[in-house]
Length: 254
Length: 254
Image 1 (tube, chains in turn blue, brown):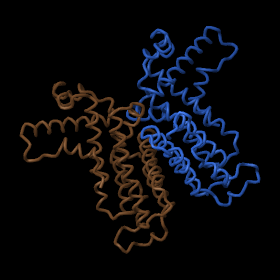
Image 2 (tube, chains in turn blue, cyan):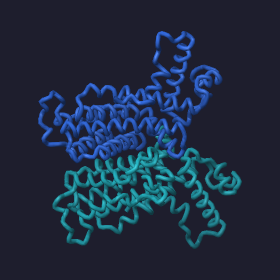
Image 3 (cartoon, one colour):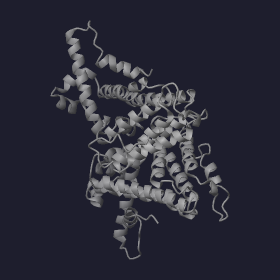
Image 4 (cartoon, helix red, strand yellow):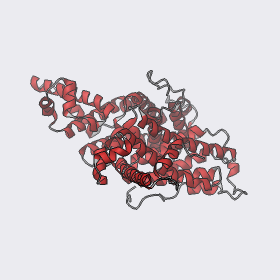
């Protein structure tokens, strides 16, 4: 399971409500969660570095000191946003794949969900990508939180590849770190070429790239329909390259 | 040839010195080139959006109005920086490959030079990557200049793949746009994982990824040493995956 420290903290901070929590404290947590929600919306558009207590107070129709009281510093606000983003990423991309059988079906689902989220973010921006540029030369707790969040996800992807090897769906010599690196590259190229360059066909290219990676490492012996009821590798491969199924309605040109 | 409009303009603006240019004008051009040089240094570290006439005046020990007189606007300064970056990228990455035979040797040289430049930029930052994040949601002439510069380079990469197909070094069914997309992804993943995540082994992974792409599309018939004297595809493939030859001295952990 990939319940990282980050997301556990987020859960405690923003949504875990025990019956013993006093009403005032509960309201405080709800307000804080609402501020983080607004801050996340702002940060995906203008970046984590663009966040300010002042801008957020305006959006929330609160006083600056009211916002400040919930975080204590701009840095703590940024870290809360990273944690919230991490929690949502896990919720949307990672947790749903746990219902898939280990091996290729789960790896497929991970890529599929990641592609879906990236496609949606072609319009809004992605904190993992913009944040990396903002903080790659700024050591500190915000950078640490962001890098830890991305590393956690890439480690989950690496683990899924290892499980696919164990299940015999991929060749034993497949290097899980290499595969995760190449898959990460496809997602980054999709974001760059579709969002910045506005190159048509980028989503289809990322899907084809994934199919190419699987074809290289796929185990031909596993390509027959699996007796276990798991999605067969054949359908996995064919499903990995549809005609841009994840294109959001608002990005027709991609 | 890939002498784009952008670089042609840069050459005219910053370095083309005919004997008929009056001395005062020549000095003005030299000063402007020096400002652009300083601005490029700043922009690779703090981003194009971080550039200001004021900060630049301080670095150059000039008055704000003195700097302003050379550009007229901050936007024009940013565009001059993009053009200069483009010119240097061509100088370092593209022009040297023209001495290589068309086909795999030239494609190899392009990737090799791109990797080298990216490796050096793991310390300093890369305007093509940071600029994409800064301007992906800001339409205007700076974004246009930056996107045009990247597109020009990716088109050159695509053309090199086509030439490799024509030369019989790659399968006829190899999709040049797909290959350029996947190669771009490797460079982006290298920059992200080495610079932001500081993951060891990233350079070797990018090189292995390139070898994997070539292995997929390589034409087995072309893998024997070429009679023409061109670098054979075999040495191409083996050279594509050395032990991180491009790591700059200051990034020992990458």
